[in-house]
Every structure is written in C-alpha cells, then in structure tokens.
Length: 530
Image 1 (tube, helix red, strand yellow):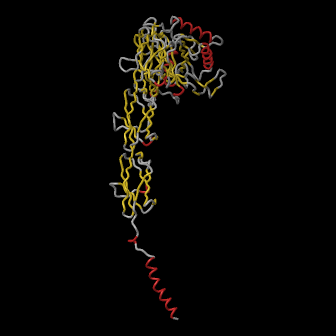
Image 2 (tube, rainbow, N blue to C red):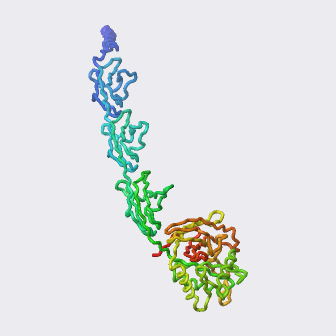
Image 3 (cartoon, helix red, strand yellow):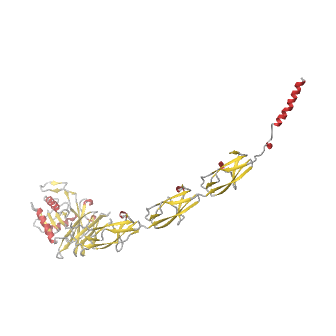
C-alpha cells in the first residue's frame, strides 16, 4: 500500500516537468538570419510587355507568399512578383518579410528602338502614286497603333499609313508610339509633266479632215480624263471629244487641262478648201383632203424622193376658200393660197408640186414623175448646178411652246442671202377622199405645214445680209406655236423644221439655194458632197 502511494506521487511530480520542457514561447524562436531578393534578369525592354520575375528566399527557403516586394520611391507593392514598364530608367526593388528588409537589386528598363520605314521614297505628284509606311518597335510591327506625323505641319497626321499628293516637293515624316518618337524619313514627290500632242498640225477645212489629240501625264495616256481647250478671244471653248475638224480656214490654238494642270499649246492650221455643199431641193405640195387626186401626187413625190435620198424636202400646204376647201388648211391657208396663185398654171391646184418655189408640176396620168425630175433639173441649172450655202440648225422648245432654233449659214461665195422656215408635222390622221371617190377616215398625212416664220414672205425670207466667201453667220429665230390656230392638236414630237436659204440671180427675184430639215428639239449639221 505504501509502495503504491509512492509511485503515484512520483508521476504527479514528473508530468509538470515534462510539460515544462516540451513548450517554448515565440520570443524564444530565432529570427531569420537572411531575406534575399533576386530576379530572373537584370534588364528588360521598356515596352510594357517584357518583364522581370522576382524570387524571394528566407534563410534559403523560397517564399511566394507572406513577402512584399517594393519599388524604391513607391508606396504600393509590386504585384504578382513581376515588373514591366514602358519608361526607360533604372528601377530599385527590395523585399520585406516579417518586417525584415531584404537586399536591394537594380533593374534596367532599356528604351525600345522605334523605326519608321517606307516601301519607296519617291512618288509622282499625281495624287495616285502612293508610299506606304511601316512602324516597328524593336522589330515588332506597331503600325496600326502608331501615329505618323507630317513634320512640316505637326498638326497634320496621316489617317492611314500611306501618303500621296498632287503637289511636288520634299516631305518629311516621323512616327509616335507610346510617347516615343521615331527616326525621320523623307519622301520626294516629283512633278508630273502633262503634255498635249496632235497627230497632225495641218488639216483641210472641209469639216471631215480632222486632227486627233493625245494627253499624257509623264508616260501615261490620260486623254480620256483630260479636257481639250480651244483658245478664243474671250472664253476658251472645251471640245466635246479629243479631236478637231472645221470648215473654216484659220489658225487654231489648243491646250489641255488634266488634274488642274495645264499643258503646252499646239497649233493647227486649217487650210481653205472650196466648200461643196450637198444640193437639196424643196417641194411645195398643194393638197387637200377633199381632193381625190391629191393622194396620187403624194405617191409620186414619195417615188421621186427615193431617187434622191435625203435631198428632197416636201412641205405640204392646204389651200382654202379659193380653189378648194381643205379641212387641214389650218393657220397657213393664206400662204397656201398665195403659192397657188403664183404657180401660174393652166390647171388650178390642187394637186400641184412646186420645186424650189418657181417650178410648178401638175398631176398627169403617166408623166408626173418625169415632169418632177425635169423641174428639179431646171432648178439645178438655175442655181448654176451648185448650192452656195450650207445650213446647220439646232432647235429647242421652251415651256411656253415656243420653238427656238439657231441657224448657221456658211457660204462658198460672197453674196446677199435670205432665210425662211416652215414647221411640218408627220403622221397626222385625218379623213381623205381617194381617187375612187371613197373616203379613208384614217388616212395619214405627212409633211403637213403647221407653222411658219411669222411676218416673213416665204418667197423673200428674212435677210441674213451679205456673207463673205467661206464665212458663217448665225441667227436665232423663234416660232410661237400659241399664235397659230391650227384647228387640230399638234404633236411637236412628230414635227420638223424645214428651212431654206434664198439668193437672187437678178437682185430682185429670189430662188431657193439650199434646204435642210431639223427635228424639233434636235439638230442638223452642214452636209457636204462626198
């Protein structure tokens, strides 16, 4: 019993001793002997991409937590144990572990090399030849992020990485990227030489011989994009096409404009050629819708027109109140009556055809065509077998239904000339008595005289004055359609201006020299013999 008690007392004493020997306080743990910071490299590119990675060891044991890496001069720690920058400089770092500061290390951020280059350094100043730039930062293409600046105007930047100009000169560029400035690069824009040439400098003034122009910008043919100009005393005139022809003998000077550049001048001499205008004839047809034989005369006129294509111009007038009572006489009944009275034939019209105002032909059973041909020949002989004038016309109808037409007359011989014009309508549907005495309610009347120059005698015409050899006069005439009571609706789209020039062989009696037909709202040029 006593032995047991002694053993128990022994254990009660030994347990506190054991507990006391097995526990130590924090103050008794030794502090770390060394905190060391290191880096995987001591220099980086200052491009905000290249980075240094830090390592911290405490007594030789690498720690990734419970340590703080600081940059000298900064109050905030470095994140994620790494560092990158876009500013070139020296940076100092240290680590802190449990209030213990490590050694310091220096990291150098080396400035990047920013280079601008171009695919070529010479362009043509034509606003088309283009230089393309490239910007590289230490070999990396940063063109899309860089700003390319025109040195001569720092506020001017390129919206794209390319440059073209129309102004010759030297241009200097540099690039900006991340606050850095690149090298400078020079681009020379050389002047484009625009020239005008012509395949011949002398043509015949016959309105068919022509000269063709070529415009070149350096070696490039730009004729289709250029404007050829003919010099005038006042306003120069642009040609409609890169070619020139004329029927007026003179010296002509030309130049071209391309992309605001003016070329050299070229001179073309147009030498005189005797003008040979195509001879045309006018036939005044006196007709009536109540005349059964008038369609026969119309048929004969169509036949004779086929023998001289485009040279016979028919003007159909309908008398009223004296020889017949045509329903189509319209506003020109008096004119028709005067032609009928002056015809001086045994058989009163209609039907009748009067060639060039003075050669009347009646309708005959079998010889009408031959008699028309004879009358044309007599008129030819009356004009010495030639026409001395050519006629060019351009017409336009305004909003008030006024037919305005500009008439140009050119002559091959000095003389006094006059002018007259009718407006005729085709496709007029109106009843007509036929030769078998039946009535065609849908007969088509062509060449129907509808309007004429007001206040002018068709036998005399309006004076054009004296026109010299190979000279031209231009006059503006107007016919106000609202002044004429036609008695029917007129379709101006089916109308033509038939006009003729007159001259006198005796100074008193005028005869037709030449004839031209021009569509309303159309034009006709001079017509020459081939």
